[in-house]
Image 1 (cartoon, rainbow, N blue to C red):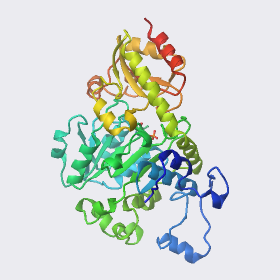
Image 2 (cartoon, helix red, strand yellow):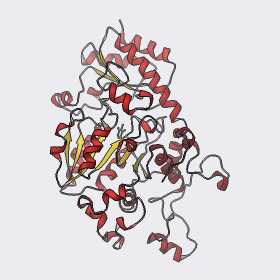
Image 3 (cartoon, rainbow, N blue to C red):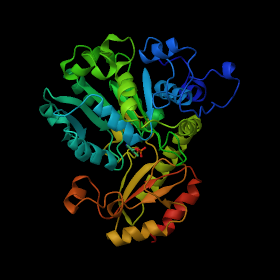
Image 4 (spheres, rainbow, N blue to C red):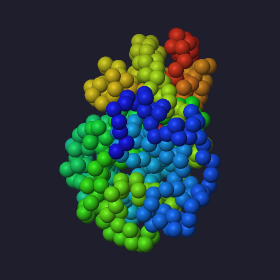
Length: 427
Ligand SMILES: *Cc1c(COP(=O)(O)O)cnc(C)c1O
């Protein structure tokens, strides 16, 4: 298991890399497509998994391997696979366990790109996404049948800023022996560890807080220790228990390795290949080193901005889970380290859609960017950008009002940020 007694701040800098052997302080970038074998026997042993080791960088790479170990230790999981993007991570996490004729239960408040992947693209693969209300789990169980393969939700949702009752969802999944998958991108591995609350699989877009500088696309999938036992002889996951013809009859559950991520690597990465490049893995490793101090500063700045906005006459309402007035306050205090809630804040401007856009255009430190989790402060008007493809009724359903403005509060000087917003809001 990827664990030790050291704190996350220490592991984020040292875990999984033997610098005594390599003598380089920075993790090297293994910019290579493939690996040389000592003998042809070794080559054939690697292909048959009798010996674990590098074959080709679509499957494994030493730089990516260090990142996988660090994500595993920060999430308290047993094994991870890194991917070319967060979207690729979610695609693999779901298609690893669901195929044509199956269904997955999906929370209603999630990232827009994940909605289109799960509800539209996967439909073309014959996988049905069934929506459930993240704020009312009473109907969740009634949507489960024998073809349900996963329950997916975001711990802290982007952009609605809802906090999931992680333990309640994990308990329902456990009762029905279904794999639960949590996207932990916005909360980050520092504020929240879904596995500690009973979740089976954690996905990330490492493009956001994990890397932190808006300079890379990357994703990850982590499984908890003991997930093998849930998969073994479970009729929902028959393909893990039967011979895989594409791997000359390999039965995943017969191997003493983390089965779930193993199959993602040797079947899905092998065949689809959205692998993370070693250079991008290295960029994420640099970012992870400072995640602890960044997410603390993001959260502190965001709370101050949220409190400032709450008292502003031009602001109708503010959404930030660490505000005592917020409906997710109790859940944020229960699940997030020290009740911190990252840099994502949204507010409703007292004015029309056009006036809200004018506010966005009037800021100078906040950049107009659809990304989140950058060290720099970002601002966006969702109704005319990220959610512009939705109809008015759909916008209402997902909670995006025409005059809603979303902030990803950065780590700049708080006085400067407040001043910038004050001027943009007018009085
Ligand atoms: C950005 C994001 C994704 C997609 O990740 P990419 O790295 O952009 O592909 C998935 N989930 C959440 C919550 C995100 O914010």
